[in-house]
Amino acid sequence: GEYGHRLQPSGKDELAHLAEEFNQLTDRLQTTEEIRRRFVSDASHELKTPLASIRLLADSILQNQEMDQETVRDFVGDIGDEAERLTRITEHLLALTRLDSLPVGETQIVDMAQVTQRAINMLTPVAEAADVTVEATWKPGCTLRCTEDDLYQICFNLIENAIKYNFPGGRVFVTVRRDGDQVLLEVADTGVGIPEDELPKVFNRFYRVDKARSRAAGGTGLGLSIVRDTVRRHGGWVTAQRRQSEGSVFTVGFPCETPEVGGDLS
Ligand code: ADP
Image (tube, rainbow, N blue to C red; front, side, top):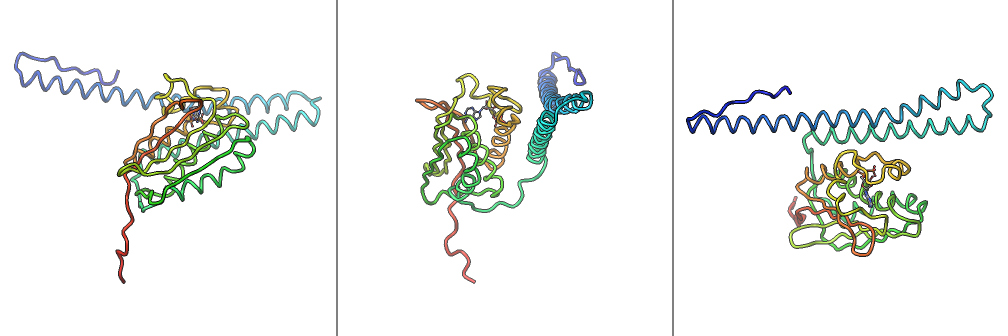
């Protein structure tokens, strides 16, 4: 590859040490370059799939003169769906690029319970359509330093997944609480669950356990990698586990920040 230069360790200790360090650096660059290349190739593939469908649908409408109105409408509807999918993928890719390149921006003290409630409210129609019940419990004083939009995105993605990868009649349990000097958000569901060996992989870009199900639910395979990158950006962590009985639990932890009381006397 491009990073093919190697230093040959010589007899002299110092030089051998230097050569070793140089070679390690070379390996790291190679890995970074490979990750980047892989990402571009995966992203292109994800964009090409809906484009190919749009092309195919448009062609069949054009080439089939006798196609009845209803079929035409169906196909045009499918073209719209694929276009929507492209929009979602592009938005997610842009979100990831922003996370990579932009500084954190202005943060404030935010209440995890409030932001979670906002995400739940926004997702109520989605939950109703899927016949999934969302239950939430929270403790007071669950404040942390973050940007509100970032925290909202984290809550939204996790709760949306818990609804999406669930069964009709299923449940989602959202818990916000303190554990020592940490604020925890737990999103548990009674859904399809994730096999043990796939748990660490779900945060990888474009990774899906069940491709067909993700596609049917309008997934992009990027939601959880956005969650992981955003959480880390604000000094937190996130894990995925199996629930004892059924389904999955995603847990997010942040260092707690207590708002200053009566700091401003003016
Ligand atoms: P997607 O857009 O496919 O939902 P995500 O990055 O949000 O992408 O999630 C990656 C994959 O992890 C999903 O395709 C799904 O297979 C799995 N997954 C995520 N959340 C859950 C959950 N709550 N229960 C079961 N599987 C899940």
